[in-house]
Amino acid sequence: MQNDTIANRWRTIDIVIAAVLGVAFGIIFWAWGLLWNGPADAIPLPGRAAIYGVWLVPAVLGGLIIRKPGAAFFTLTVAALISVALGSSWGWTLVIQGPLEAAAAELAFATFGYRVFRLPVALLAATLAGLAAALYDVFIWYPETAWGSFRVPYILITTVSSLLVAGLGSVALTRALAGTGVLDRFPAGRERAAV
Image (cartoon, rainbow, N blue to C red; front, side):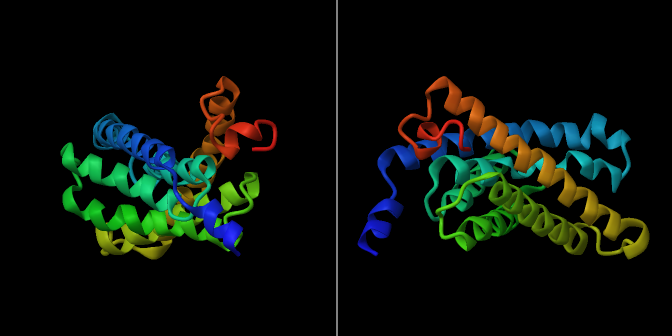
C-alpha cells in the first residue's frame, strides 16, 4: 500500500510535463476552434463530429505519459482553460465541459488502478471522454435537435472519432515521443515497445 502511495505521488517533472502538454493543446484547441467554426463548418453537423477526437487527445496522452492519478484530468483541464484564456468561441462553458470530459477519461485509468496503460485502456479512456463530450453537447448545445436524425448519429460519430483520434492517436504519439528518448524519465519512455 505504501509503495502505491509513493508510486502515485506526483514529481515536479510530472507537473511540468502535464502543464506543458495542457498549454500546448490549449493553443491547438484555440486554432482547432477556428477550423471547426470556419472551413470545417462547411461540413454540416453531425458529420463534422468526425474531427471531434482532437479535443480529447490531452486527456489520453496525459494519462499515458504521466501515469498518475489525476493526470488525464489535469492535462485536459489545463488545455480547456488555456483555450478559454485565448478566446475560444465557446467561452467559459469549457470550464465545465473540459473537466467533465477529462473525468470520463480519468475513469478508465482509475478502473485499472493506474497500473495498465496499454492500447485497450487508452481506447476506453478515449471512448468514455468522447461519450461524455457528445452527451454534454447534445444536451447543452443542441437541445432542440431530434434524437434519430441528429443526436444519436452525433453521439456515435463523436465517440468513434474520439476512439480513433484520441485513443489510437495518443498511443501513436506516446510511442513516437518515447522513441526519441524525451520520455525516458517516465514509465512510458522506459517501456517503449510496450505502450
